[in-house]
Image 1 (cartoon, rainbow over the protein chains, first blue to last red):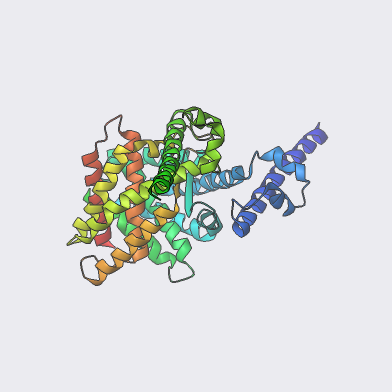
Image 2: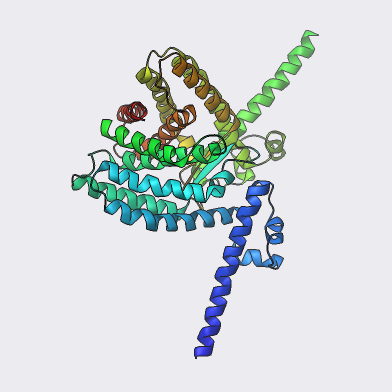
Length: 203
Length: 203
């Protein structure tokens, strides 16, 4: 019994490992060649896996990006949820979300770069994956609670949630693209936090 | 000579007509079936054109959406450029952009709906097409001029441009999705303008 369990665990572990290896190779290849120029063969060549292995995990190269974004959403959600629950006012609430998000953008700039370079027909794109949708719904719930408790101003929760998302994403993209020139993370976080806080206060 | 010219003109006209017909049929079909479920055959069935005609104009169904967004960017750019040049201060500048953009979103909500419904793997997505990139570059140039002339506050032009784009798009998506419930255009324009103006003033 123990042996079998061990075996199963090993197989599960291999499966998880292979999936991670393919995601990592996919992101690396997208970054070098651009998504539209990348083939599944290019991605598999970047690993030690057999070429058929890819389709045990993904249907298309695009699914790799979605998987990477879903994983990031889960990871960053685990960071953002408890932080915003501790916020005592609007500034703390916004800063608690913006600061870790920009640290994530700095440490995973490859995800942002993939969506804004080396594309054929479009200059940039963005997607909202299922896990991102879940995290945004959780954010909206906490905004509604914050308004009820008097911690946050009484603003339409759909628009409230939308501006936190769109400003953070927009400034993070601009920050990542402009890092080589003169943009630094502290001024980006400050810009983003002040902009959202004072915008929300005024509506 | 006149005859030949007339003939050429007619052919040119047909070409432009066919392209418009395919774009319109594509948008209609995307709206009903979702982009991922739509085939080129579905789109052509929605027209009187022969099935091979499609590939004279487009390489893929995705190119239809890009073409529609490019055309929209040109149209809305023609409206936005002169308006912002007449602005005397920050409020006028922002309102001159936000108001026509939301009227466009209301009148062409199908473009926004296509990007936020009936999708397989992602809840929503957005793209920046070449003409949108050009319009955003023109906006940034006018922001730099406005700052030099003292009409606009001295804010990093990349971030300035980014928040106008991201807040307008984010609120417009939320407005279009929520129209059936309780969102009206005047409050959306007011929210968006006040948010951007006061956010920019504070950074």
